[in-house]
Length: 115
Length: 115
Image (tube, rainbow over all chains, first blue to last red; front, side, top):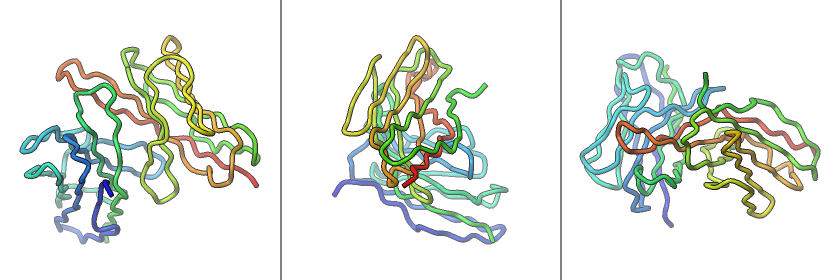
């Protein structure tokens, strides 16, 4: 089955700790994205990547970092610099960000809570 | 001004009725439009894409697009309690500086179908 997997499903972080959220896709999509969703708010773009070894900041990149060493994988690190990291994190992918018909598909999400 | 606007709801409809969900957008150059369904605690699931003016039907769902009025809607016929969810509108707009596209999400409309 093709799809997007995220792990873990739930994650708890202590103050001052960095944590890494995993995102893997086997859809052969070029583009991958990380969003953050807070209650009552829309999805906000953190980072995106069009190709391997290239990624761009989204609207709220401060306190986050990413890498794209393989086409299938786009991990997100939430650093201690992110002051309010408690949220639902969603990874998505699409065939090509340069396409106007660009449908995005989402993984199941990781819920991060700061203790 | 928000770029994609939706009424947050909740929109309550009786079982078997037609639910009408609306979305307006500000970028007149937007070319593609998407509806996602998001159950509580879950990730968004793509249910409809529409690219040209008019209606597009898929089972009980009909998406309607009016680019002149910058308006896209989703109709759900024969609504069922299982349709109770938050429905997110997304608009794909061209970023002229990079030649790539950016998804912009509305904050969603919560639909409640009453049995």
